[in-house]
Length: 147
Image (cartoon, rainbow, N blue to C red):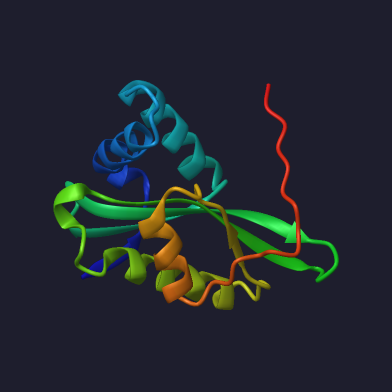
């Protein structure tokens, strides 16, 4: 299994996987918008995206992480915002491998950890995160505000 950091040359294949990820989360398919969104992330280095691939034109899965900062720990903290494996590649350990790669990023960047959220109804993801060493935070309330 080859896990590499995505670059602009991977963009066409990454867009296909990213659009499938958005559709999985009940968003309308929008390949053009996905292309421009990912192009900006990669160009501006706003996020780190790791992909699982056998070649430059096919992506089996990806993880996208955004940098945050923890004021109390005075270190960088990574937000694991997106993790997706294409349906025909599920059950092969790709998600676990991508999470391990994300953990390597934390260590390499001297960060304090990774945070993430997933839907309560996503039982597979909830089991995956516990199995890969994440702990469920029951001490804090999380809130959001949307426009």
